Image: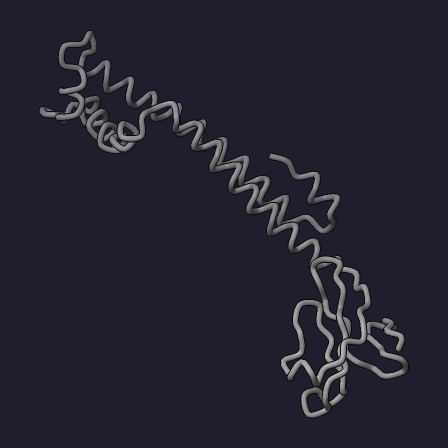
Length: 186
């Protein structure tokens, strides 16, 4: 028996078996002859399943090559591109953060709070900064200013990385062809 596709329908001989499935990659759609109690048409066609009827009741006929649906291919590639983009952004932000010990970077929020209080003249006791500068050449105000400056520099660099991700994300979302999608770079 000949299996063919015509006008979006899979045929075995002259009998219509099933509509061609929309697939995100080129695949083989396999066709079995099955009891009509299982499928009214007497055929089962699938790219990724076997008939659920008893195997002795199903006769494998063959397969037909089905080309991927271009829209589904683009959507799948967009999903992959978005995943890659997030991985790349995370890696760049991680690299930025690796310039400092993890436990130290965990202290940044309260370092910044203490530094701002010192610079505003509202802090008498700042446990982190006071203990950090003890026995060093730093003054409270000088170290507080260093923390604020470092925070601003880190935020600017992290912000540029996130900005890059946002622009790439929009380009991925807006891509209407594989060529447009492949032109999006990190």
